[in-house]
Image 1 (spheres, each protein chain N blue to C red):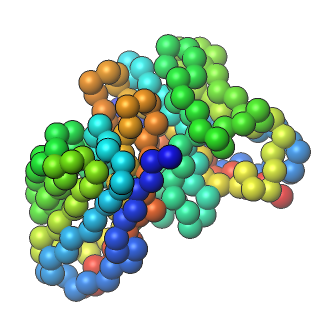
Image 2: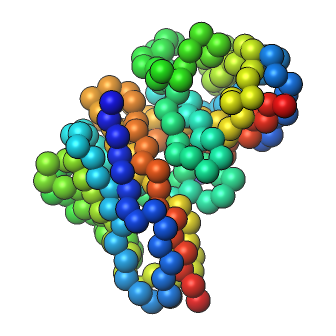
Length: 114
Length: 110
């Protein structure tokens, strides 16, 4: 069964460093998402991406964040200058397309900023 | 800002009991999804409900979407230890944004 994959599973970085989190969505899905979940808190929407551009973003997704689909398979989230409060699980999700509402989540990347 | 509340926050029951968890909002959602999440893993989709008043069954799980599309419930019949986990509801507005509730943490004791 197709699934969303994410790498790395765990990333440790120092405050101020740049990190890139990688996702491979389900093949032939058209909508891509990033969410984060701070330990013990709810899943929060960051950004949605469709047709090679951001379709919606939350207040959390400020100028330090960016997303890219550099090739036909990968979907990346870049955090330019990490802060301690960026420590969280980051989940990628994909959705097939219009009329198909089901989101499929990856296993997540645990980001620890020290 | 659309918000989803879930109740109860925690629920601990014995195997074989029935339970209902709730997802409520003051906002209308175009659709609502239920997920189950295990510690350290991503949410796994259980069901999507779209039509007000819709009822969907998935084995021992029954999902209902409120008539006004502002609330939903998940009922589990004869709970088993394998049902233990964090149950999340997520509502879709009319954009691409999915809003998650804080979850109900269910523990089913053998």
